Image (tube, rainbow, N blue to C red; front, side):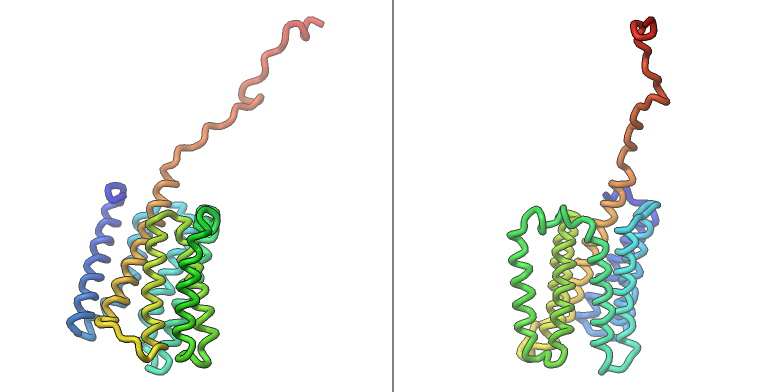
Amino acid sequence: MGRSLSRAARAWVAVFVVLVLVHLVAQLTGPAGLERVSQWLLMPALAAVVLTATRWPRGRLVTWVLVALGFSWLGDLVPSLVGEDAAFLVMVGFFLLAQTAYVVAFAPSVRASIVYRRPVLLLPYAAVLVGLVALCAPGANSLLVPVAVYGGVLTAMAVLSTGLGRVAGVGGAVFLVSDALIALEAFVPSWELAGQGFWVMLTYTVGQGLIAAAVVARNVAERRAPEATPARTFVQHPPVRDNVVAFV
């Protein structure tokens, strides 16, 4: 797909990759300002990749993915601008909207997903959802229902992403891991993972990037599809008269 990208799209891919590397280094080394600003720029750069790499008419899939990236950006940005007590709920709210937008984007491809093609693979996703909610339940208290709802929407996104192919399916699963790590840190007091922020952001950017790559590939393939040959009609090619019938 790389060769089919425009020069602008390739430039934005490079910008996104550089921002990811800068942000991950900042996660490990600790410059809070650099970490914050680079995170604010991640999703706009990825949205620019999708915009410049896809072709008009972009259609429903690309449009809703851009909406999802927009809500993801707000989830990265707005929590830094509100009080610490509200930051987590604001982040979860925007990412719930982002996951919902992804579900809407992927839903038309459900017949190509594991829901229809390999339903046995739904079991691991269900196990992850049940296990995650069970682990978070003791610490979630009054937030248990919102946590369960968010987990359900997140899992639905990951399942439906398989309808776009393997790359999107892996992206959806990796994105699920990212949000699961956030939930475990927030609601499980005994949870400890060295470099938690690094792993959350690594899985977040890789997951979103893979989904975006799959969406771009789908758009490019659809716009390259040959036009169907118009069916021959009697208006274009009148039927030949039968001489016997004409004589009679």
